[in-house]
Amino acid sequence: MLIVQKYGGTSVGSVDRIQTVARRVAKTARDHSVVVVVSAMGKTTDGLVKMAEEISGNPSRREMDMLLSTGEQVTIALMSMALQELGQPALSMTGAQVGIVTEAEHTRARILHIQTERMERHLNEGKVIVVAGFQGISDREQLEITTLGRGGSDTSAVALAAALGADQCEIYTDVPGILTTDPRIVPKAKLMDEITCDEMLELASLGAKVLHPRAVEIARNYGIPLVVRSSWTDDPGTRVTSPKPEPRPLEGLELVRPVDGVEFDADQAAVSMLRIPDRPGIAARLFGGIALQKLNVDLIIQSIHEANINDITFTVTQNCYNRAIAVADAILPTLGRNDDPELGEPEVRGYEAPIAKVSIVGAGMIGRPKVASQMFRTLAEAGINIQMISTSEVKVSCVIDAADCDRAVEALCGAFDVRQRSPETAEAADRSDSPPVRGVALDRNQARLAIRYVPDRPGMAATLFALLADSNISVDMIIQSQRCQQIDGILTRDIAFTVSQADAAEAQKVLEAAIATWECGELFVNPAIAKVSAVGAGMVDSPGVAARMFEALAAENINISMIATSEIKISCVVDEKDAVKALQVVHEAFGLSGDEAVIIPSPATVS
Ligand code: ASP
Ligand code: MG
Image 1 (tube, protein in one colour):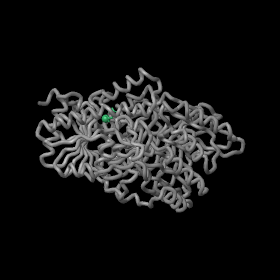
Image 2: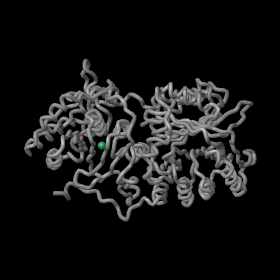
Image 3: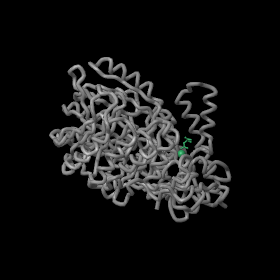
C-alpha cells in the first residue's frame, strides 16, 4: 500500500515532536510505502509574514514566496534526519525537486502537474520521501518558487496522493478529526466518524481550519480516500469519503474541469408566499405544515424586500403541488396584515406550469466566481430567462421554464464540455447512509447585498455576476426570488447574495456603476449579518429538516432574513447579534451534541 501522510505545523512544532512523528512514520513504513508531507514548524510561517510586514506594507509576492517556502524546508530536513536516526532510510525533497508544477501566480498558485518518476524510484528503494508542503515551481523554464496559499500543505498532500495513485491520504493535526461544529462556540460538538467530500465543501467555513478546501476538491475529483486524525493518538479520526469519480486527467490537476456534470429535474412546480411580514416564526410555520404533509421540498429561497416584507418560494415535485398550495393557503390567514397598507397584503401564488431546475455540478464553485457567471451567460445566450437561482459550493442551480430545459442542458453541456448526468447515480449511492444533518457551520464574515428592481430579461444575472467575477469577488448564496414587480412599466425582480465582508465595498462600487446605466435598480448593503448552515447528504430523502431548523430559530425568536438551500445544505442569514445563539440552537436541534466536550489531546499526554 502507498500512503501519503501530512503533518501540520503544530505536529512538527519542535524537535521533540518531529521525533515523535518520525516514530509514527517509521512504524507505518514497516508495512507500506510512505510519502510524508510537512508544514513549517509551529507558527514559523506567521513569523516570516510578520518580518516581511515590518519591512514593507506591500511586499513583492515573488519575494513572499521565496521567504515563506523556507519554513517547510527546515522541517523536511529535520524530519528526514529523524527518520534516518531511527534506521529508516529517508530523503527530503522540496516542491521543485519533486516537480510540483504550478501556475505562475505567486502566493496563490494552483497545481498543474506533479512529476512522480523520481519519487517512485526512491520509494522502490524502500525510502520514505519527505516533501515540503505548500510549495511548487512555476514551470520548467522559469523555475520560480511558488506557494499555494496559506494552509496549502493539505493541498500538496492530496495532490501528491492523486498523482502517485496512493491508496490513502492521512492528514495529521492537533485536533482529533472533524467536529460537528466549532467547539469554541459549542463545547459539546461531537467528533464525526465520516463525512463526504461534498458535505465537507459545503461546511467550508467550519472545515477550513482543519482541512484546506482545495485539498477536499482534489480528493473529491480524483476519489482519494482521506482521513483527518490526531498526531498524538491512535484514534481513527474522521474519514472524508467520495463516490467513485469520472476519470479525469492528471494534467491541469487543479485547473481543468471545475464543472463535471450537468443535472436537471423537469418535474418541479413552485409555490410562493409573497409580501409576508418579516418576523420570526413564519418560515417555521410554513415548512412545519409542509413537513406534516410529508411533502419533500427541494429548493427553498427567501429574500427580504422593501420595508421588511419577505417572499418565500419553494419547489416541490408536480404531484405534491396541490397539497403544497393547500398548506400555504391554510397558513395565510394566520399571518395578519402588513403594517403599511401601501405594500399590499400577503398572498400565496402558485406556479403550476412545469418548471425545471438545471444545475451544474463540481467542486469549489464559490471560489471560482467565473463558473456561475459562465452558466448565467450561457443561459442568456440561449435566450433562456432565469426565474430562480440557488448556489452552493458544489452546485449552481437555476429554475427555468420547463419548455427550455432540453435546450438549457444542451447549452450547458457544450459550454462546460461535460456530459449530462442523472442525479440518481454516484451521489445517490454516496448519500444512502448519510444522516440528514452531519454538521452545522457559522460564517460571520459575510455581507448581504440586495439589488431591487432588476429589469427582468435574460442576461441580467449574467451581467451582474460577470462584473463581480471580473473583480475576482466570490459570491456565496445567490438568491433570485420569484416575485416580479412593475416599475414604471418595466417588469423587475430582486436579486440578493452574500460576499465576504472584505469584498463588500468593492462589490458595491462595481454594482452601483452598473445599476446607474439601467432603467431602474437599487442596491442595499448590510454587513451586520451571519450565515448559519446545516449540511447533510441525507437531507434529500428526509422531509422536515428545513422545518426543524426554522423552528429551532423561531423558538429563540431569531429572525431569518434570507434562506437558500441546495440538496445537501440549508443556509439562513440572521442578524449578526443572533449568530452564536443561532449556531447553538441549530446544532442542538439536530441532536449533534455529544455528552461531553471533545478532549483535544496534546503531545504532552502521550509518551
Ligand atoms: N506553512 C503554511 C502556512 O502556515 C502552509 C501550511 O502549513 O499548510 O500557511
Ligand atoms: Mg493547516
